[in-house]
Length: 329
Image 1 (tube, rainbow, N blue to C red):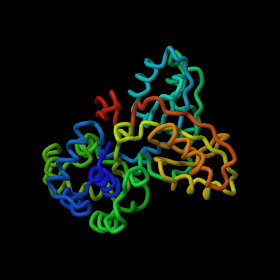
Image 2: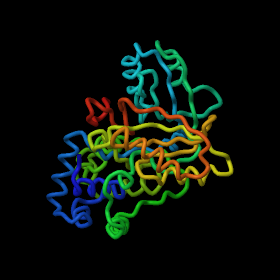
Image 3: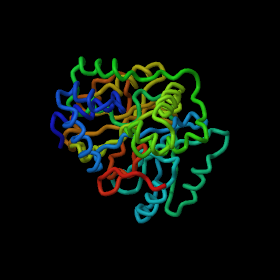
Image 4: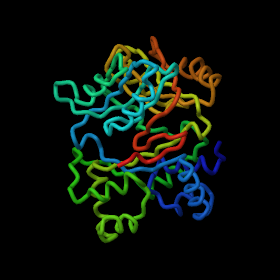
């Protein structure tokens, strides 16, 4: 479990992933040294990873959520094969050990993506249910402001004022071949300093700064905060598959996304046209969320759920023995 200061630090990182420790210290009420030490302790423990990622839209990829039904005796082998696929993220095993739910980025070319063909041929896979994500009401990854103690609004405004999120202009552009070393370094550590990035790329710090600004402004590069929520006091998770009418889709989806405990919500294709990922402290907390929180949302006409048994992968991190680790390259 986290104390208040660690929780504030995580909230600050969700708002401004590359904010200097000095600024984070200012808004959380601690020294720069204390904030740096607390963050590095959480990172070494595999609790948090800040990563820089290339927008899938650069390559014309479409995000989908996939439910894979499989024989329980093939669970470990299927999970191992699945997590090694670069197209797969946010994967977990559902309670009962006969289903894996994951996010998938693939080309939409009027034919079955090759990665789904590979999955269909994997021994032990019984059925694949693929649903395209039509609209995300919240960004991937947990918004810590809906989970742990949150920063005061004044502190949030200070972060946004000093570290404003870049608004992309136009469509994301393909990164240059020479960006490979820079992007690889950011995929390992999205908070790497400009000096460290200059060392990795052989560029000057000024060139690194200019290239980061260009990639962020174009929407090519974005930052994500991976959290091992099980280590942070939220071991009970579930994916909900919700149904509402087209007339209420946006209102209901937005309302679900704004609820406490919701890490992600989106409109999807399929018989159930909304999905949400919920993280809770225990079974009683999850029941309370269903009966008291979700019950207040207008327009929900039905739901099913997949209770999370074990997390396999986040946006850019594998989960090994409860710790976030960088995937092999």
